[in-house]
Image 1 (cartoon, one colour):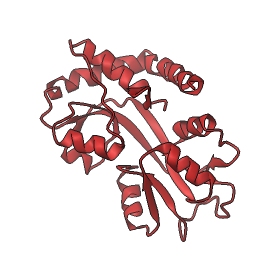
Image 2 (spheres, helix red, strand yellow):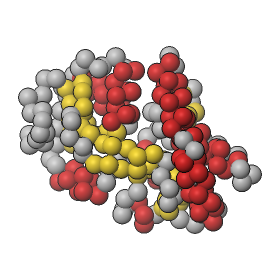
Image 3 (tube, helix red, strand yellow):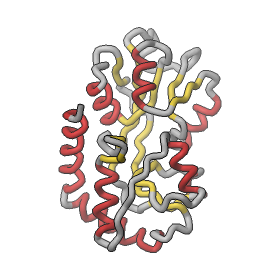
Length: 219
């Protein structure tokens, strides 16, 4: 959230909203399927079971299987969240610490390589699982988009137990992603141009505010 999250068994948020809007303009309706976790979603797309991923970071590894919109949906400053019991705060030090990630997580090529070398990494399926583990001190650091992390911590009532470090880990961008060979691939230049027009009109900014409120207000 606010980019995307599962509500009442359906994917909602900025990215699903924009995907529906853009594809409706080309005569398509979108069935938003939920696959349990991010890794399963990417696998389904690689297997041809999915025509569009509504939001993904662009990495060299993913570019082998996907094509991405030239225009990003949003920029995503990524930071590390930690718990108040962690003595190694700023600057962060991963030595001897446990890093919490989601299955299928990627935070840019440099971080992914560092995470692959780190001896203490635990992966789970949902952000809520990681936040609760972090609050209990079962993991020490968790990378996440700053806006997303603050919203989730507030929603879960954990703002007094977890917090973001000030250092920027990386600046990533969420893009529409299509599996190579998708029937929608010829539309990608038009989708990119439309995303740019919506960004220039501040539509995406207004939509972001709406979905932030919706996420926090939903029981």
